[in-house]
Length: 171
Image 1 (tube, rainbow, N blue to C red):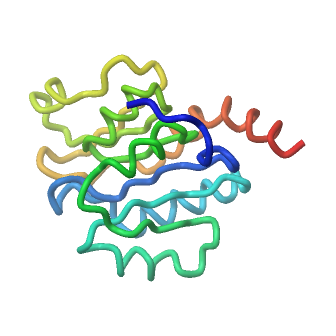
Image 2 (tube, rainbow, N blue to C red):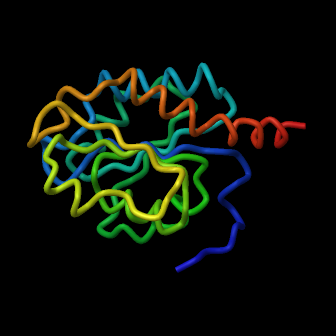
């Protein structure tokens, strides 16, 4: 479904999804902190929305308790509340999850992190989104070993145009 842009763009924001479907498909806490610091430094007026699952909600709230630009969402039993958030996001950063395909459906700028397993990538890669960048890990079954520097470069590249939009928002 397409949602109306009523409450979602009063301030530009990034959806930073830390978790995939398996424990090995999780962005490590130190990488999450680096990403948030990079965003806060380079794009200080953007908020960061972090969806949480029941098993990581407490840890994520603790990790970002002193970071006012970050909102850790309460867990939801369905992906439905995320649909409009992804549709109107300035950028989505996520492991290989449904969020990749939702962002592609809405043409939302996307940085997706995949394992090095080529067969699964070919089956589940981002489609029809010229604003999608893929970062690959060094491992076939986990996100371990992806290049945070490459990820930050992709964020910078995709946020460049959006940054100009957000600067106009401030005027």
